[in-house]
Length: 117
Image (cartoon, rainbow, N blue to C red):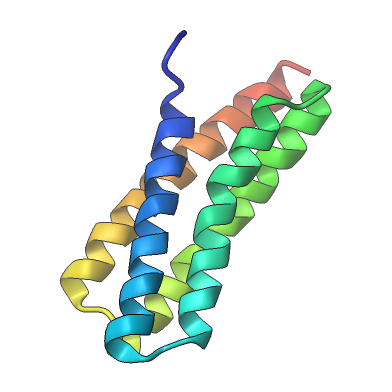
């Protein structure tokens, strides 16, 4: 089976968001923001996976667009976590760079798919 880069990246990112959320709850006793970043950070991969199983090109684009929006939301929660001291600048950079890369890939796939409608 051919490797799907975006599926792998979004899955790995989701795993890192689960671990971040667990750390925030266990070490910082932070429950609200940890759930937000967990929800949006794991939704990126879930919607990408749904897109792969889309029944039409429009369905594919729609699901990837949702994944793109969830990735943008995740950037927001990561910034909040950094600016409130729940994660360090180094942790922030590690996650932020990964989600930025995912955003660029998703944007590229969405645009090329729209151009081929």
